[in-house]
Image 1 (cartoon, rainbow, N blue to C red):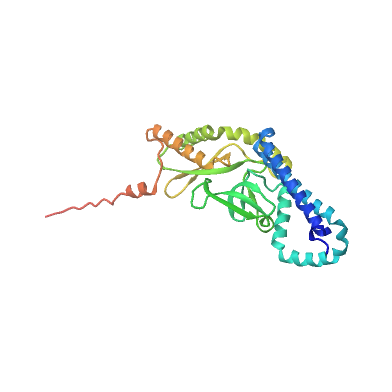
Image 2: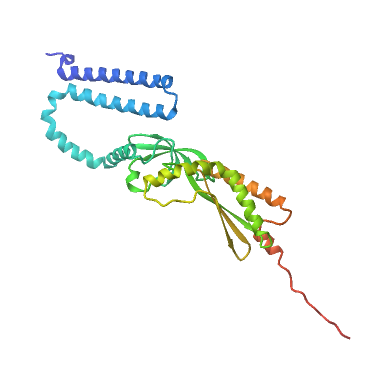
Length: 297
């Protein structure tokens, strides 16, 4: 009786296991050496992904080479089995197709802030099946991290819109609304708001002006106003000034905080010529009617 370890099938399996182990060792050595030669985090990340892809390809190639002489008789069986597997694993296959679309279609890359599958956050890893994100928002106001790591299937790129906050043009337009009393000096109010917004976001305007022409060249889009704008609308209770400006997508909340603080400081320096309006203040200022009563004997 022939010993089992002399069987050609077991011999080939042994070759495959040894080859896969060797490939694994080589990959680990290459990944560890990346930190010594590549200092930029994004380049190092892409290099690690490329090395992993080469490892998978080498493993599949090894299996095909070792069992190449037996593949000819399995074509029909593989075809039938493949149809069943494709139907059962259609979500997995769609995710792989989504990964290829993301990788080569420039949908997003690690470090981008996106909204994918109804979830907003920063992309920290793009896998074959899932994209990993550090979530923003939910119970935390603004665009701050909430500490929750979310993994979204890559198939969502075919099912829902993908919102990218930082692709091509890493700035957003944002607005704040400042209610001002009717008794305030309109021209002084506009001058204060203009001075404050230029002081706070002036550096963003310079960079945005340099980036916007590239967007106009790449897409069919009209030229937009990059400089801050101030629009006044009169309501029933006060004058409403809307300040619109460009800002780095990571700094929206911090910029609003800084801008409101500076506006209040400047309003206080106006010595009452400009004042913030509020519903509470307007209600308290409503005067009672005057009654003139004459009493005669």
